[in-house]
Length: 174
Image 1 (cartoon, rainbow, N blue to C red):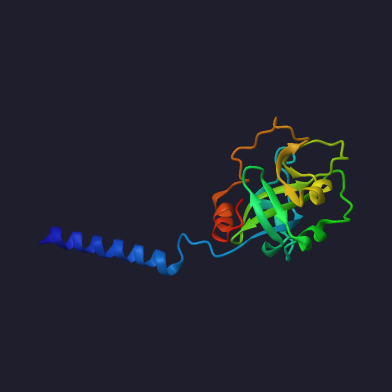
Image 2 (cartoon, rainbow, N blue to C red):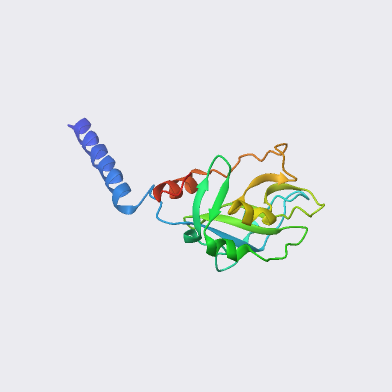
């Protein structure tokens, strides 16, 4: 009798968790992917790596989800609509980069820099060359500046499943 009671309690618990997963939104992604400039931050170990725990974002997204047309996961390229391209056009970029964050479903996923090609400084963190935005119709996140594939960042968060799930959900994944 006691064994049946334990089994019955376990079945009800399992049913409750499964039911809550569907109703409570556990595991569902309801948000968007946005790009925020970073107001304040600290670097780790005298490098370009941004300490995520120190990041304070600007209150408004610089690039909003509706300005992102598609995301190419193999090239790590965010294609933007005309409004998104306009947001980044005609901006003067400092040689030491402008920090930003990719936020998915309200969570900071990773940080990076707009790092212009005329900079003689190197950076060992995620970067994108803002001078190529218009030519690419968006921005490509690369590992480090100058790029060239010699940089590694572990784990590589550019294709974080939270980002891909949102783009997949809305047919924006290339």
